Image (tube, rainbow, N blue to C red; front, top):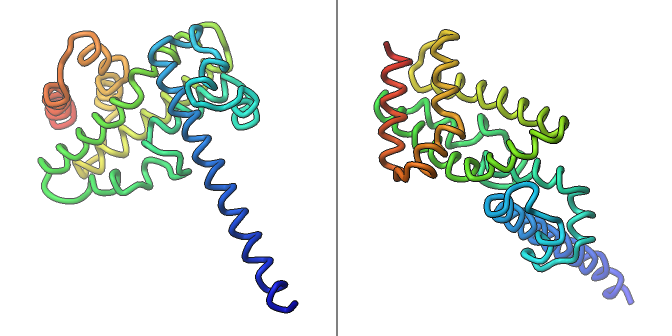
Length: 211
């Protein structure tokens, strides 16, 4: 009897850990499906039912996990910025702190690589965000918050790379050049590849921030 009692907590812990892992996998499936559909069909063309079908889950699962299509869009964008669902801000991640290591050229290359990775994930979603923001004041408020945060990230990253402060004019110019819209025009509309995009962003840093 003593042996059975001692084993019960271990079984419960295992079952709880399994449920948490399964819930995490389900959330990841939903986020992946939502991101793909927002890119393919835009905001209005994407429904919760379609997301559930793509993810292979019930509609109720999507609502219980995220609350609404709006909240799901918000979570998809947050994940796209950093590349995963871990609650760690970009400025606290290794990819960001490494921008202060090595020669200036190496730092610039690392910064452009980080930027390209972020844009590859989020720029295709941004048109859905703009579409949603045009008809929903709350989402438009989120859009402005994301842009404010992106401007701060541009300041912190470029100042870390150059080991110097940016003036407001240079910051505004780089914030604009590094935007999701600019990436979409270069890569999605004009068909530039990652290397060509990186070349243009490197030229922008050298022309604007080191003048």
